[in-house]
Length: 504
Ligand code: MCA
Ligand code: AMP
Image (cartoon, rainbow, N blue to C red):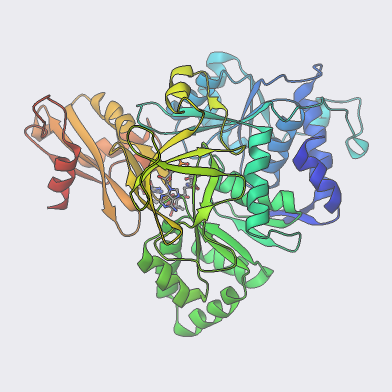
């Protein structure tokens, strides 16, 4: 049996999920995911790592689908529920997904792809019994293939220093390692109640919130989309005790807190100060945000460092000092080294690139041997591209080794990917995309443009055109029209000069 499903046997009567105003026990999750796995299998005994894409709303259906794909021997490919068709198509084509599982509201966006390819699709709300008429769902206990934990389980897309996102493949073993290190380090238990406010096509939401709570036998609440009021209402009325988010979310929650009365603020502080744990990560947590949040909530945030390719790697301690501006120490089972440009151990007190080894480290980039090879050292350490230094035993992240990677609102965004789309626009002859510091978003995406004729440039029309082609959160928030881009003697755009132009 799959490790996470096996774990659930210990907690069958616990409430696993609250979504859409309903609660679901682990027994229900096990039964329904088993049934759905049988549906995915149809006449096959094992999906043998077929890629099953799914565009399913956060909640019971999402977790059921994920567990079903895993039990049936498929590789789960979660799609972002807010992406436009071209971004979805890219993932579907790249993974050559054999089936798409979807909530019915996403049928419209996916229909052109379904029509074009004739891909098998399952709308999750449809009565599944019609497809498996011979079986009684209530008694369903379908035999499932034996899945060796070295098999591939998940593909998540991550942007990098190439213009197209890469599929990060993790095995069941990687996922188990990513989950269990956090279960131990952060003392997850079946008494925990958390809420998932993060998108479910990235590690932070999938592993840290959903899989950890499901592994521990805890309860996880889901909300349809990010809303400070909804989050605080759930905090207040449901005895939640664990919360995880990116810095931008804490910033947005504080903006909301500032908008309510003093009395309401005090009431919420009372609720929040009884939480067991609040975690922040995916991007640098500004010390100002950490301190202000402590004032509002009575909670000292635990900051940690992770990556799609690794899950979590470095964490401040659960017990002990949570040091502002630092991400803590390597998690148990995760080996970390700081190295110089030659990939030799950096001198003590000197900054170096973080390289990582351990069962948590992903297997490969999907069908991209070159990228996989170049991202590991000869002796098998994964090169993160992040620069850090150790100060008094704690790691401090100093930045990245590429200006082309932007972190905005916790999303990792490739400047090159946006530039490629911008260059397709009829009025744009050249462009350079950079991230500039921003209190709320961490970095704000901005673009310097060289246009054929300024009289034709219309920012609103450009934004509308862009979001038909890529996720709205990748859209530049400011533009600057230039006669030419700043370039060095080799003709390469000097991105730091572009940044300065915006900052001035
Ligand atoms: C939304 N917008 C953004 C972003 N999100 N702009 C830049 N960067 C963003 N991240 C824009 C929208 O396009 C829209 O603009 C406007 O903000 C409001 O959009 P809306 O969707 O209503 O915003 P929101 O709901 O308030 O979303 C903000 C958010 C979201 C909740 C902070 O960005 C989010 O969920 N971020 C978390 C991402 C995440 O999980 N990252 C973890 C990656 P307009 O109206 O003009 O269209 S995993 C990872 O990093 C590793 C493993 C790790 O360490 O965890
Ligand atoms: P992703 O590829 O979306 O998984 O993003 C991973 C990247 O997020 C890392 O390589 C870091 O650059 C960044 N990151 C994650 N956590 C932190 C943190 N606590 N502080 C600074 N950067 C972080």
